Image (cartoon, rainbow, N blue to C red):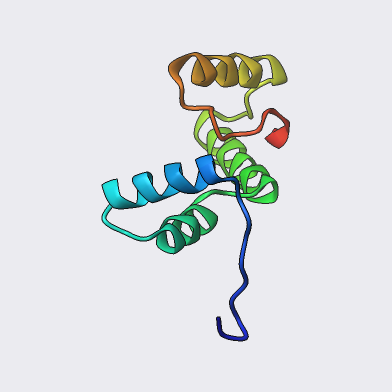
Length: 91
């Protein structure tokens, strides 16, 4: 390992699964974990995106969606499976 690297410990089952996932994606466990870390938004990034969407909607519609409309949209995304990684608190 170099100075800018670190190790992580996971159970054997998790390591085996990561290895299988990495192989299916044509990469290494390291590559898989690095891609996950870079591509998965953090809570603050979700909140920033939500703010941008609200601004765009307000600009296009003349007003921002109500909290009730946002809750309905979140519920729909959850039912469709699009909200697996998105936090409910990002609003």
